[in-house]
Amino acid sequence: MEITFHFESSVIPFIGRIAPSDTCPIWKRGSNLRADMTLAGFDGFRIRPSDKTFLFLGEGYSSEDGNVSLAPGSLIVLAHKEKEITNALEGAGA
Image (cartoon, rainbow, N blue to C red; front, side, top):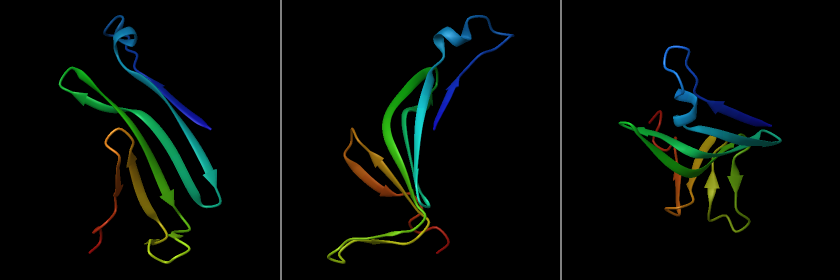
């Protein structure tokens, strides 16, 4: 499945030509979801590009050696350019 978004306005002509658009492919396997995005947002009038993957681990994850364990319902953000992995919900509800 893919989600595509773009901006249009009947009030501001040609906004669709200058405003960003993005297509976000989404994959599902069991209760796990993956979504890839290339648009982070805006910084004033500048477009902030991004290359991120969001992983929702509905089943959780445990490595074979037991060194890595993520609880069911974890939301992981992979920032490809920065080569960072973040647990977006870490500390939530604590």
